[in-house]
Length: 70
Image (tube, rainbow, N blue to C red; front, side, top):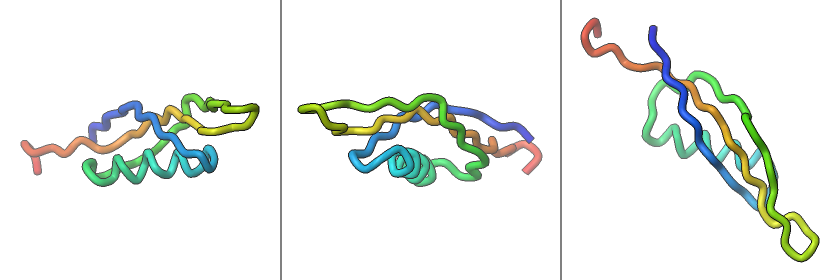
């Protein structure tokens, strides 16, 4: 089996978990066989002294389909 890992950035005003879930859900629309996700970085934006946006970088690993040996 061969796998590939890509880096995605997700964001949400509601928290880190939702930002991660949105990034994974979006990837799942176009990528089959998602295997793992790893949180690489989390940060936030502040507006008027309050957290306005959570931003995460997530590594997503998925299986590369083998069309030769299918």
